[in-house]
Image (cartoon, rainbow, N blue to C red; front, side):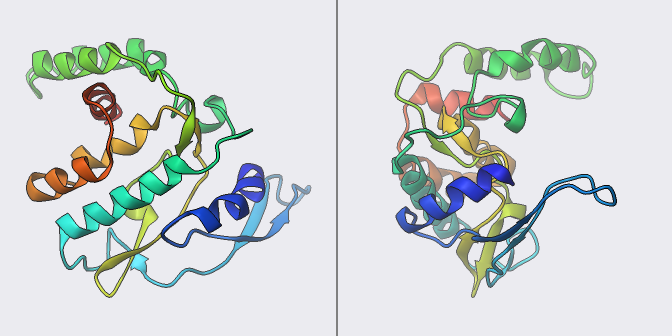
Length: 200
């Protein structure tokens, strides 16, 4: 919330879709020992519950939003770390845990295939300057109004770094024509695409 207090207002004017605006920030007290905030209400329903008219068009609109986010001025932005579960950073942070999990899934999933996907994701790293990423691109954080993508919420894991983590939705929620529409709309190289798959 402290991060959002600083950055949402700076990012909003540069983006093609509305994002929340923080109206007030509450500080921890004895009765509620956490930060809390009040945000503007954005019209629409969660894409997880709302009706999407055309999923490939929705995917294209999301790609346009992420492109705009990645083009925003990243000067002084928050780098990956514990605050955002290292999203935007190196997947190697999760290597040990991932391999341990895969070893327990034999007979449930295609472990050799999953291992290959993981190792392809680890084989490269972001070589460019850090760029803005959302960090939690999922249907639950995307709003739909009149069947179309209307807003993006929850920037709690956002930061600057490798944008590959924002590509995970291509496998978690898109397939077929929607995935095919998303990829050219958000122009990244094959290595970044492979790292995005690793974030799933």
